[in-house]
Length: 158
Image 1: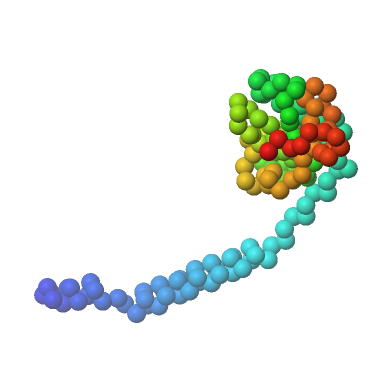
Image 2: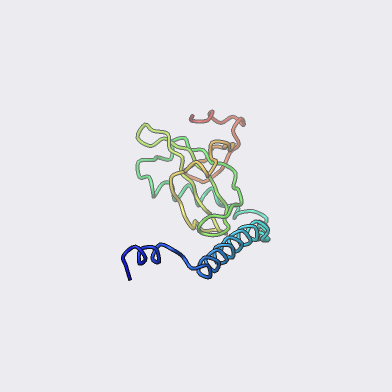
């Protein structure tokens, strides 16, 4: 065979190959479309119903942990605590509590994840914790007592 004819055969597709390739592409496209629309219609799991509330002694639990985690905090340092919120985190469903305090001249926001009467995780706050939008009360580090701001206590530390 001459060279031109060989080149022509290599570059030319047979009609059966072209049709099957087009059919395969259509099937792949349809599968992608149906799987994407199926995801949007999937039933979302219902949120877990929060228990009646965290252990009432969560203030003591948080105060003790703050004192052990931040050695330079003294019992007389002003600390604020938010009301617990029921959230789902990487640790599962738990109560999120935000705290504000001063550490070496810097305002810190630290969060606690509480399940029952145990802290399951704690860390510095990130934006998704939404600690900036919470209302805070004073937390006495020596007793763990929580006192609402505006009841004769000093104003917030920020």
